[in-house]
Image (cartoon, rainbow, N blue to C red; front, side, top):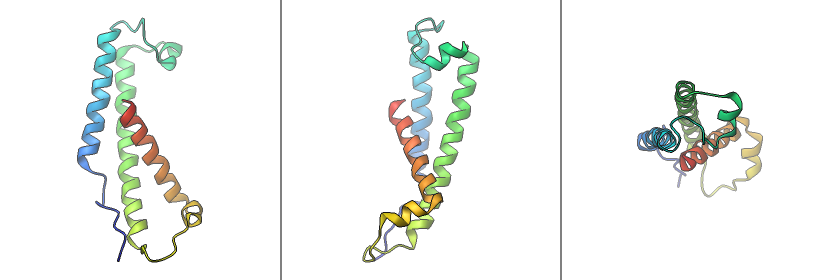
Length: 117
């Protein structure tokens, strides 16, 4: 019996939901503080960013993180496709494999930003 990782790539619904949540986060921030006077984000206040810069940075990092998530999903699928449930699978194999560790890091960043948006 083979362990199946799911789709070859990241689910499109999750990525679309991620873009929607980021857009809603920006929209609610604009509703709460259109002039950014009451913005609580330390980086925005420190660098004195305006709305154009915030939207540009949000779009850049959203596309970057969605791309990393897609690449990590492809690699995780390839990595776990050859694994068997009956074999003794140790975490040392995962820790020694730098690509799968980076994939887990990309998953963590993506899902933490998805649920905090």
